[in-house]
Image (tube, rainbow, N blue to C red; front, side):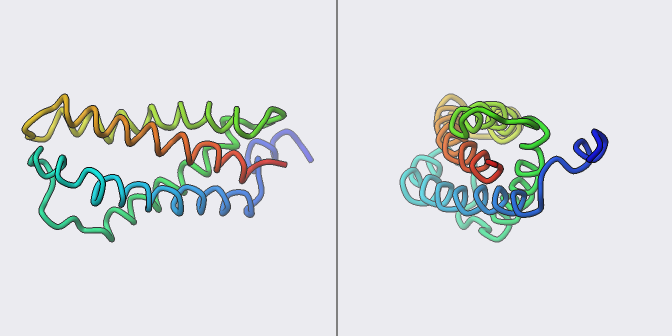
Length: 144
């Protein structure tokens, strides 16, 4: 195997699909329960979201994100020899920070809402939880 093939194809299809599934299967219930059960009234009080969310669009978003975040992992950690938990938490920190920048900061900057600080607190806590779970799961999918 050449160095070029490692760069072009750093991991197998099986790992990619396991990482993809780890992201989508973990994110959907976390997001559903967080936004539509535990904190539904707080989000409604912010007056930022529609009364009835379009769940298929949210799932489609997660599918795109899952593909990108799974594809990205072996490019960020090409030769992982550490623990999947350490690598996963580090990956979750970086991926979560990226996600937080466009799902939390950008939304707060562009949308009308009753309280920007309340929204930032809710979505920051959600993002921390989400990526603390999915980061290690994606790392586990790529574990050799």
